[in-house]
Image 1 (cartoon, rainbow, N blue to C red):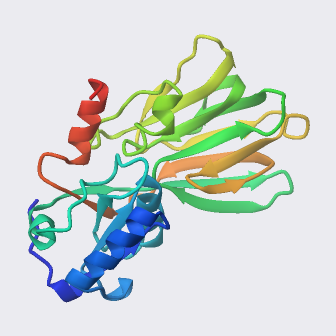
Image 2 (image 1 turned 120 degrees about the vertical axis):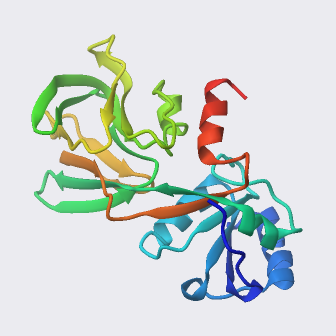
Length: 260
């Protein structure tokens, strides 16, 4: 989908603390101007994937599209950096719409916590002992007991991040799927996870929360000593990411599967 070019006065720039990002921020704002986030037609994020995730969280309910340019360490979610022809690049950019996961956590003291995740929701053991977890999908017990370091639920956008490092599958960005991936499973040894419909509701229960405590993390928001975690995709929230033609997120995911 091609976009109408924004006026120079309608672009907001954000940057990571990295020196390269800050220098690019100074040059680009001088060249194209810079408006407050609340008045922007498009946001240009300068940094790496960490900044992109923080920007997506920050603007989650705004509807403002975000165009990233790589000035950080990992740039899977970013476009190539260039100071020239930015208005033209924004006009020609293609839109990818993504939705977040909702993580609802009940901790061992009965408190309820809720956070959003764009990449994944992960559960980790907090001590030297393996975690003991049970997994329900849409109210049905699918795995009575998993012993290991933990488990994660990844979106298509996050399938090439921690999920891939944990030997999980890469999911095309437009596939209506979630990856359920164990982290260093001990038992059952040969279980390597599952692909689930993206409308599935996943409940993970900690079977021995006092002796084997577990933490739950939604992107960068962590809750310790959890008892039960409910995970599902929230279709009421839509976020727009902009990519140059030929470098869309779905194309990058395909390339990742072929190792380039």
